[in-house]
Structure formats: C-alpha cells, structure tokens
Image (cartoon, rainbow, N blue to C red; front, side):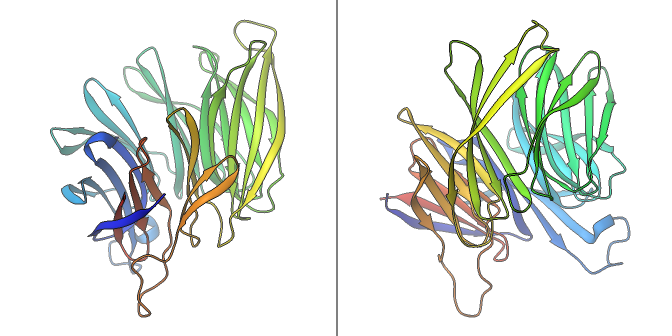
Length: 348
C-alpha cells in the first residue's frame, strides 16, 4: 500500500470522531469539540464547544454548531431515505440529528443528567430505536424510542465507560458489550420487552482501560459465533472468538464461551478505535492509534502505519482519535485532534 497525502482541511475545533455517510462519494461526517475557559460559556457544562462538520472530498459542505457541547461519539444510520446521526454530547445531552439534502437539523435532544457522555450505540427493533449510552461516572443509560423517547433501564458500574458495542441476538434480546477504565470488558444480556439485564461475561485481560470493541460474524453451524476486537490504553488489540449457546428461543438462558486467540501490540499511546473492513473478501482492521497514528492490520499483523504526516517542529504531535477508509482501500481519512485538521490520503 502506498498512500500519499492528497489534501488537508482545517477545522474550527478538534476532530474527535468521524463516520462515512457515502464512501463511494467521499461524503463523511466529523464530530468535534474544543475546550474553552471556565465561565466563558456558562450554559455549557465541562466547558466544551462542539460541531458536526459535513465533508465531501475534503471540502466542507455544512458546519453545524451544536448547542449541547462537544461531540464525544456519534453513530450514523440510514432511515426514511435520510441519514440519522445519534450523538453523545459532553454536557450529558443525547441528541439525534437528520442530514437531508446536505443540511443538518436537530430532531430531538434529551438531557440524561450525566456529568459527561462518553460513548453510544443503537439498534432497531421493528422501527423502534434502542439507544445505549455510557458516561464518565460509570452509568449505562438505555433509551427506547417509540411514540416518544423513554428511559427504560440504567446500570451503574464502578469506573468510567469508554465504549459500547451492540450484538443483536433476537427481536427480544441484545448483548451489550462495554469497556471500562479498570481494564474490564463486560457483556450484558438485555431483554427488550421485559426490560431486564444481567452480566453474562466479565473479562480483564487488558492492563488498563478498554477503549474500543468491534466485531464480525463467523460462520458456525452449531451456534452463533463472532470475532471480537478489543482495544485498550495498554497499546494492545486483543482478538477473541465468542460462541453463544442458548437453550431457549427467546435467549433467556444464554451461555457464552469466549477465547483469546491473538494479541497485537501497537506502541505509541493506546488504541482508540478499531473498524473492521472487508475488501475483496479479505478482512482488514483500520486502527486509530492515538499518538501512534493510523494503522491497517491484516491477520493480526500491522501492514501499514501512517504517523508523522505534515508535522513541523513548531506544531504539536498528532493525536488520532478518528480515521476512515473505503472498502476499495484507496481513500483514507485521518483526523488530527491537536492540529484541528482532516487529512485526505489516496493510494497511488
């Protein structure tokens, strides 16, 4: 792989997360935040400004200033022929936005009364949305949207929650994977109708906080199975095989068998995001490696690292929380937090 810097885009705030809207058209969304002086904006807790920036081929299409503070996490869904953005804001507000005709508009916002939301995920249940939000106080907030948005359950853990990943099992049951500051990742079985939950797996292989969890399905004729990719501040990606056995059709009696199959160290300050990419029927992982830059991993080995790009002696080093790559592995986006810059690479 031979990626070369094609263009760069300077932002007003620091980019913290990004997601494709249409990779084939070079269209993606960037969430940002900026730390401000205490008291400069009294309406915001945690003293952070934030924005949602719609980008197409390194050109800003729309720049939406968020009233609810910094953007710590976002997820994209396509619903009703429009893109829906689910956003976790720094001041504890969960908000949903719509993108239509390259315009961003707020659909609704809910104050979770959290000190700081850190991560979110969602799944759909017969046109009803379920939203799962983690926060810095160790709370997992679960909301269900039907005729209106209602909080249905909440759990409290002892440490900040840094990531959440959802594995739907049936129309009634989902597995919620969470990563916490103490190095644990836990798997929680949540029953949608009964609004009950229980921890079915707790693992603390990591030596420090678990920051990201992603997965792919594995073909298995005997049970549901998948591969999990778990990243941590301890600079490791851990590869797990997860097998799910259940004796009842409603998944009320779930048994998990999880096995650590591989481990990859990427030195340089921790793993923040892992994104599985299938290209030509082969699996790659795009890794946002914080101070180590962006990486492409295949077969548990790093095959490409992009780190010291466009940096002078007077500038701060790159901190990479967010990156994207298309399925053809020809267009790569790297967001540099300190530089407030989005870098667009193409493969030559």
